[in-house]
Length: 178
Image 1 (tube, rainbow, N blue to C red):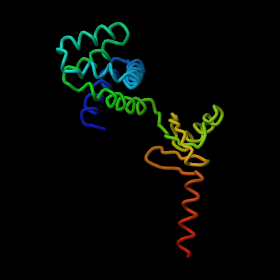
Image 2 (spheres, helix red, strand yellow):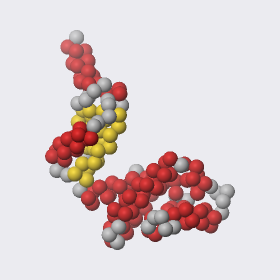
Image 3 (spheres, rainbow, N blue to C red):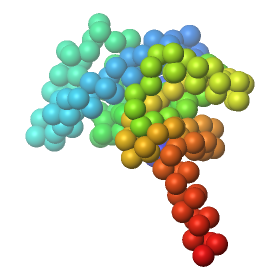
Image 4 (cartoon, one colour):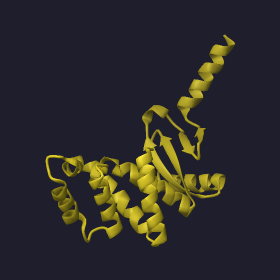
């Protein structure tokens, strides 16, 4: 995480907390980050020095005024004016981390060989909640290379119960004895 993302993300987080808008701003930042990810040409247009700054601000204002909270819009304008709109996604990610802390939520990054069912997700979330003592938000990624089982990264710890990991341990054990 860059210092810029920390500084701007923290500033917006503090403002949203003071104004009791954490959930609103959080949701808007996530939606905008996803929109910018799926439509990178729009972000490039807003950052293009070929257009005067006032025109880029006008484009941003026209697109989002009345659709997002004024604080979110002003935040994007501030980044644009400072030539730092490229860092929007990092700022949103930082804000998300602070939002999770404030809500007592811990993120668990899960890697599985196949998609989890809703029942499996709920059971895993419940079990990880028991381990962490907090509510758990799962971020699941499917990777067939793990072959089976799952790997969880949560609160700086890794829990690896994948077949790939077990085979690696077995391979190391066998080569040490030879």
